Image (cartoon, rainbow, N blue to C red; front, side, top):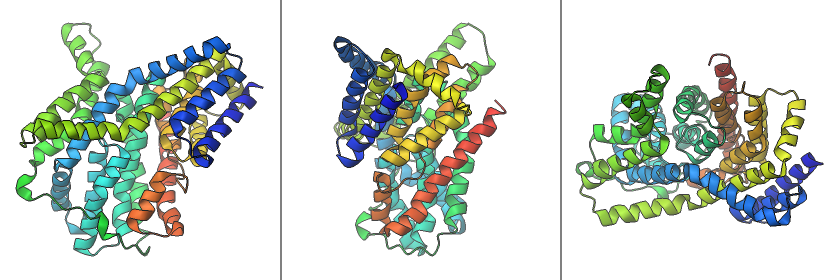
Amino acid sequence: MTLLTILFCIILLVLLVSWAKINPFVAFLIVSITAGILLGIPLDQVGKSVQKGLGDTLGAITIIICLGAMTGKLVATSGAAQKIAEVLVNLFGVKHIQWALVVVGFIVGIPLFYNTGFVLMVPLIFSVVYKYKLPAVYIGLPMLAALSVTHGFLPPHPSPTALVGMFHANMGKTLIYGIILAIPAIILAGPVFASTLKKIPSSPLATFRADELPADKLPGAANSFLTALLPVILLMASAFYLNTDHSTGALHKFITFIGDAPIVMLISFIFATYSLGIKQKISMKKLADLYGDAIKDIAAILLIIGGSGIFKQVLVDSGADKDITTILLGFHLQPLILGWLLAAIIRISLGSATVAGLTTAGIISTMMVNNHNINPNLMVLSIGAGSLAFSHVNDGGFWMFKEYFNLSIKDTIRSWSLMESIVSVVGLIGVLILNQVV
């Protein structure tokens, strides 16, 4: 009965979001309260479950996501992303310009949230397409594959960050493993797959071409690369140090402190504010407005994450989590495959990668508590990969790609949807291989 109730609630969530067009946070709230009542939580306790789930989830990740959004916005609007692109295009040459854009997408995609990255990077793609008279989908899809992979696999993006907290994984290790998986996923779903799409007709709308900043207004190359990559450098360096040094001295404690994800993001944010803001003579008033816009961009994402936390808490407080764990273990599926499969099903049903990842995590989180043989870092990545599976007409990213590149629905499915599916499958294969090694 418990499983049927959970299934009913997931179907209700799908219908509320995709058919009734209700805001995902409100949908999560309605479904979570309904689940709590149906699963037997006393009526006077349902509200407490809602508050605890919201508070516990957002309390762990709000700092990371908000500071990441503000830093990413500054990287893009200051011209740092444009500078990174120029350097790499000059380095790779016109013949390999596609690979240059892939590297740009990966570097810029680490601090930049996907929707923001898409809107800000697509004009760069179009400027290259127009300048060198190249096929738009062939040139652009690999860069967007890189953006998508960073969104699904790597902290500080919302879903991976939230999953790290829910599974008590290590942020640094997850980032390192995520980068290892990202490289083959981007190569296969990007340049390799795009080589089959050269003949897709696409006439990008001139409306979406952005004016480039003049060269004398751009930050320096070293400054641009360092600022964009600083969160990654700090997280990876601290993870490496803490895994090789097991002392308890002052230095170890200091590295533990500065290697904590919120502190890493705060250091990176302060550095970016100076290096790409104050140093570039951007006024504090303009920076404040920029940061305010960045928070507006991710407010809806934060609410969705909070809503998924409510759903998880209801499952825990009702005892349904233990029943689910027992049932799922009865299927005898490898847990990493199970996490990927559930995320993929919800992604295809709902369209949102973030909702898919977080809903899956809420359903199987107790498996992580009861089974210590599951690597939590790899479970984060497995669910992240599943949450990217087959984007289609119920996903906003699908329509953004279609409209910006001026494609038919058939060609959008042939290019965008298959690219996302390749990323998802390659990610799962990579997770299973890593599980045999780490």
